[in-house]
Image (cartoon, rainbow, N blue to C red; front, side):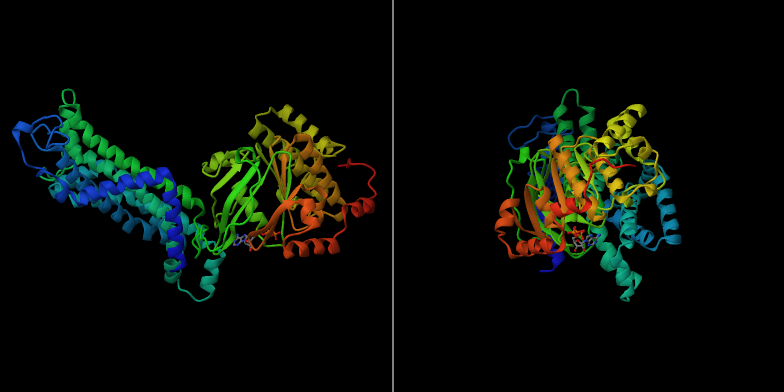
Length: 579
Ligand SMILES: Nc1ncnc2c1ncn2[C@@H]1O[C@H](COP(=O)(O)OP(=O)(O)OP(=O)(O)O)[C@@H](O)[C@H]1O
């Protein structure tokens, strides 16, 4: 089996595990089957008129009763399903055929192709669709297929936009350059890389477009457009509408069928969107869920009590780089994630914070922050956790401060925007935190620009910013790596103090077991995207279960100065620093 087929199977398995998605798919398949098998399933000819059945209630032989002219509603509903599904399929295929190649070419080639494609797409969108449909209906004698093709033309801009934006994102990926350098032509790159990247968003778009097409189609039929001899839900609704006060069931059956079908498509689309995370679609060969690698890591805290809990996380670019890892940390606990460069530590943290780059695709059985499942939250809600429930201290303090703004601006603005403080209040709070992180003259620092302060000072500023919102979880990604050796111990000490003062959970990502020994309670050891062991620091140091852990401990002991040595080396007079 190819990797892509493997990945697709993984996706479908995960889809079917979602109750809403599985139920929606079952409803949709039922409608499709009902339509396909209508000639076999329908107990009566859908157009046969039996006057004794006119407006008859449900009864033996006529499951849903009769319509206002005496035709069997159940049989018409089955044949109507056929019309509805056929119409939606024609509209979607037309939209795909017109929108996807155009969008992919516009996004990938850019320049004139993009301008022309976008212009046509905008032009189509600005045409009043219903008026055109009525003109087409009049001109073609209400030919149903032509009408559905016309609806498809109006759906094409949706496909164009989504394909264009995916192609635009993908063309900047390094592997596209690599493919070009390797001699592939534009057509080959489009076929092998870009089309694959747009596949998932197109499937999701189709689920939504099909629902819209069904709605439009029913609207037309309701208005009387279309052949009277072809049973359709729109016609049935029209019939029911005229008698709804005395015989509401005649309207109810087709309305319920249409509502259920459109709702099923919408749920299918949103479940798929959740799973493949359209914004981060991976055009590469491997799906994030590709289950080649067994799960690793141990969860030790009850889910609802964990400050952070990651369950079976996988992250993939062209290859999977994090292979189904699980870890958790409780409030008040310090967890170290340790491993050599490239072991997947940062990817794990970025996935937990929803900060992975656009080219990454991630899946997990669960991601909990503050005991609450956040994996399925929309992006906006997820990002709202940053700065409030989660504080983040990055690896490179200097490159995380904007050189164009003063430190004051960069500390005060988030306090105002995220925490709703007034200007004076935010400034006072900034002063207070800066003092807390050891800055003796906060006003001077607030007025400084990043280039005027040291790396250690910049890291203190970022730590101040990270804890300003009193988060329950503080994540520090190699917080000391970019700093002078003498400043490292101070920063670690500060993190530990703040952590215990606020009762926060602290996750420290590091390649250095010295850091782990200094401040962590438990440690997760990562290698090649997997966890090799998890345990309390004392136990791991005393008897590492994995030879790799033992190697890392030994390397840290040989290469780095211990905390005591660092303290002695700098002979610190106190913890405050002058700005
Ligand atoms: N944008 C990307 N595209 C493709 N692969 C990536 C990308 N970012 C990271 N990777 C790969 O993911 C793997 C894990 O990287 P990660 O940054 O998590 O490692 P790390 O353990 O944090 O190392 P370091 O300490 O050097 O940051 C690496 O093999 C890396 O090459």
